[in-house]
Image (tube, rainbow, N blue to C red; front, side, top):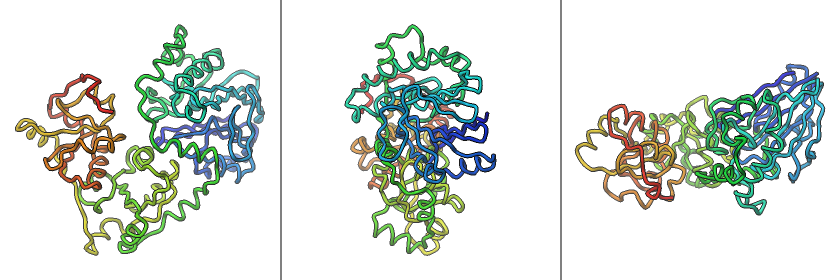
Length: 472
């Protein structure tokens, strides 16, 4: 028996490769499916099944492409209604994989079709669960993503999640291994552990959602309390995963890796109204960038932030990217459904400068310089971190303007007075600054190093704020 977790940190997502006696099952595959096929071929094995735990919201799955290339059927749990051929498993239905058995456990709550797959070993003993978004390590899947489709409230779905966990998951033995669909950093939950594999017994001990003495009302309140709005791209990805019909990733990469000279790049931007997306490191963007371009660096939570901040997955994109990272950028964009990359700037920003085209920069100061200005005068400060981070500690009188909801706060930024923007470490504040500058707001200064540097230089930080002061 081979079980391999294929974890993608950018999405905090776990796909799974299971093999027995030359037969392979893939659970929740990413869009780029070549690695699964090659691994099976290297092991002289054949992909027999493709299991989907639910219609994913945070990434575009590779299920349709993988099925087309291997002939393996796609399997969903009860109530799923995809627009393509698939096996809709009954609750408790079993699938043989070599000497192993995979049993579908219908566990609605996160979505109505959510299904956990129980793996039994060759002796019929429960070995592991592949829980998708039904059960995370330290948390469970948010219950607010499927309510419109199911005509239910998130409280209704949270109640179903309570029932699913207690009737299908918690009765399993403590030594069963839990392989979740996501880890810390995913927007599909709010309290996930950094670990990506655990025993069910340990989860019963430390996961708030699995407390034996918890009432359904308590569960619903804890699960729904403090949920941030889901990223805007989530419903669009659900639609793609449910309907299929999108292009294979190889075609997307071929189309997107088109080198454009500075003149051709500029002409494409003007003709198509493409958004110029600069994916270099923030330090490079600060020094020089194309005017009105948006920074979202590859060396950060790239794909989720693209999905959260760019409203339309069909938006034409032009890339400014370091040499050698063109394919990686396009691959990671496609994972969240952004398939309309028109090309990239050949030669990078240096080529742009060499032909004397206009550039811009971003004013950024050290935490030490920021401290001096704070001590000298009362200056407007804007904190673009998450609410939980802000409450845990923030500069006195700082404005709370979370990056994910920045467009709702535009009217709060000074029209002419210089203001200062910071996050936790310097990545999100540069994203925020680039968005503001693209909207004509240039009277800003980035604080390099964010809250980490701010604390290091001794700037006082408050650890409490009345929740009513946080504007939604």
